[in-house]
Length: 573
DNA sequence: GCCGTTTTCGGCCCGACTGTTTTCAGTCG
Image (cartoon, rainbow, N blue to C red; front, side):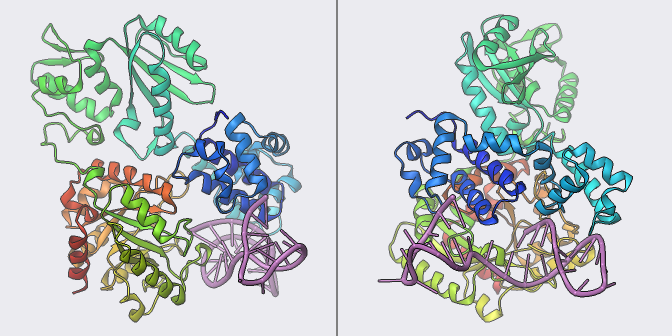
């Protein structure tokens, strides 16, 4: 059995199927089954192709005969009969509308059926000319919010999340490296700088033929639909799937200069050019010159060294201030000894305590902090006091197995509207540590929200603040919050703050990490994993920490288990 | 569509907010 569509592709197709079914007014439980299956596929940690091929994927919870067939069809043919027929029935504009906050299926269907609207531009017009506000239970405020939602969606549609971009770039680099006369293909641009969202894919290709000839070879090899903006060194290729990628071609002796140029950022390049100029060099687009002498730069290290600079890791190349500064020792994935923030089957995760413990051990960690949702998170199966006792017994049993990993009893406790936590103090005392997060009431004023957080920070049971600003990248802005006040209070109280490594969040933002460090805040990298596949999130959290210039000493889960225990104890004392 | 020591049918996740209404449907997390 050949597999032509990968795990991420299948997951995305099933999620889209769920949207189609939902918009058609299908049974919500059928829709939910598709959504759950999409998550199961997306979070599958093993060899997905093999599991589809040998049928073992059908054993997964929530995968019955119907979804097994859809998954198999998608994976082996890249198509689905159900998908094709639904796509023909549901206008694509309605799917777009699902991305507007405040618009659900019921309202979209109502808009479609009563006003005959099925595109975003038509919806925008109807919101402006007052037609929308005349609908039952719609009003001026709703129309205004929909206009805001459309604007947000427009802006967001130019970007993609970093994990999607990274996966595309990886596949593209692999395809390009197989093209004749290509010596190497390197992802550059925002993907290489590890920004949280990516607007444009950039690839640097080292080749031993003229660019014009190379673009022809590439077109033949990887299904290019259109070549735009071609000149002697680069071209923008529009690929079959709709992706647009900028390809820059270089001979080996200029790879360093070209890679630096293609990686950016603009501010970094400006600072670098200025530094070069004051040292008697010229950094033109494709090469380095000292006066009129050509300086070969076969790699980036050579270029930075020639300019009297240490090599600057791409993650740090942002506002230009990094040029001329010492390069800090940045945290790496291998520095992390602890795995924090994950959900099990006790709330909305899909693996057991033991499965997670074994998987996390396998990935090379020494300790694990389990944090299911607390009781007010009803939608996520938040834990009632009885569940807690059962889970604690289970964690004790797993620790007794001596798997080579220490499992800590944690909770992701909701911070309620008034800043209180979700259980009485005697229950809170039973946890080894607590991540406190906001999951409701996002629309408070900055003053109210800040007071809410400050009260949570003041609670001695709180170890770490989870996803502190609540943003969902390309979906929802952060709530109003005085972060400086939070940093100062957390730093003083010995409360850690999370970089949530879920690529939909990446919250804290790397731009504020320096400020957090100045306030003495210990940063934890939290995977927010809901299954074993979520272990891979950590890599994105590490990238954000690196962009913020953080080293292992500033990361809570770079400590060993005893160090983590000591941090919790010091905070409680 | 999936699941099952309540197992082949009947149930599946729920509480709170928002914007609209003047009692509540729709949306969200």
